[in-house]
Length: 224
Image (tube, rainbow, N blue to C red; front, side, top):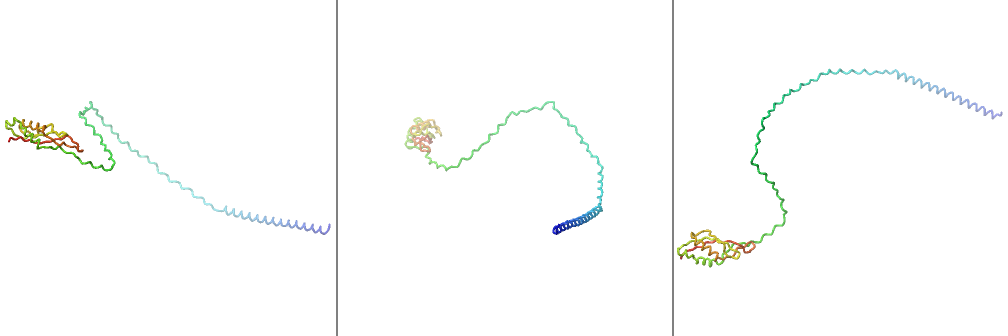
């Protein structure tokens, strides 16, 4: 074996020895650390186990409830017997009403007001008028000239009130005596003279058309 080989063999032996030494030292250190840790754990367990634990006081017994008192029941109110029912032996007489009141009048319905429109145009002026005499002096004198002969002989005088209807053509008809003279002869002569001699302008309606009218007058019969 050469020197180099021997030198290499020694170096490997030393290395192995060094590793073993380190391993031993590490193991011892680990044992010491573990021992210290175990001692510390034991002390902590002893400290914990020596703590005085105070037991909580026993719960107080609840007070005894008061004895139950019996409920007072009120007696039911006295029940009065129902009053006796009197039954009439005969039913009362029923009175019928002869006069039936009239039915109420129907309700009055007021129609709604008509819509307001333009004001109506004013009506045309009315042309209505009554009958008027026509040539009255002429026919009045003719009536008086026809003095009844009997009245002349008996010298009868008087005034007669008459009323006639005037036709649309202006003639007198339907004469009636409104005030008697006291002589039937003069009354009849006055009506006959009016219907025979009297002439008129006829009455007019609103539009100005001839229509039937009336006229009243008095006729006096007097002897000269």
